[in-house]
Length: 220
Image 1 (cartoon, rainbow, N blue to C red):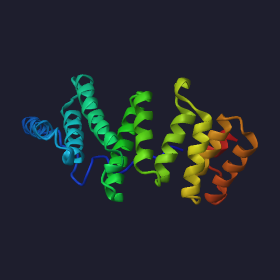
Image 2: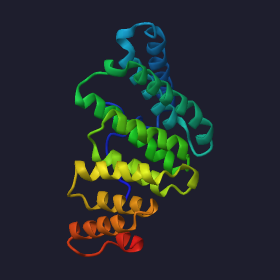
Image 3: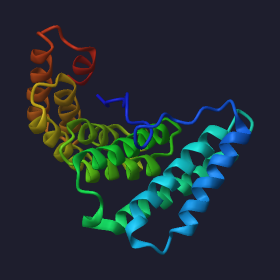
C-alpha cells in the first residue's frame, strides 16, 4: 500500500510555519522573496534561493484558511515549482551530501501526498517522480509512486508496467517490508501478470506472519 510520509514535511530542519500570526508570516515571506530576488544572478546561491522559494510556498500554504485556501494554493504551488525548477537546473551541482538530497526528496514526497489527497493527480505524480529522482535509494518513495501509478482513481494517470518496475525496485531496496510486496502484487495484478501477482501477495502475507492482510486478500 502507499506509504504516508510522517516526517520531512518541511525542507530543512525548521518546523512548518504556524498559522496563528499572519502579519509575521507575511513579513517572513517578504524576507525570503527579497533574498531570492537579490541573489538570483549569483550561481553560488542557487541552492539557498531554491530553499527560500520553497519556504515561501510553505508560508503561502499556511496563510490559506478555510475561505481562502483555494485562492492561496496556486501562488503556493508556483513557489514550490520555482524551487524545483532551480534545483533541477543545478543538476550535478546540487549539494552532493545525502542529507541535503533527502531533505529535498522528503519535501517533494510530502507535496505529492498532499496533492494526491486533493485529487490533483498530475501534480502529485510530478512530485513523486522528483522525490525518487532526488533520493533514488529510498524504497518508500519508489513504493509511493508505484502505488499512485497502479491505483490512481483517474485511469488516465495509471501506468501499470511502470508501477511494477518501481515496486520491484522498492522490494529490492527493502525486501522485508510487507507493504512494499503488497504494492508489487497490486501493480502486477493491474499489469495482467497474474501468477507474479499471486506470488508477491503471498510473500506479503508471509512477512506479516501468515495473518492474511485485508489488502492482500482483496487483490487475491
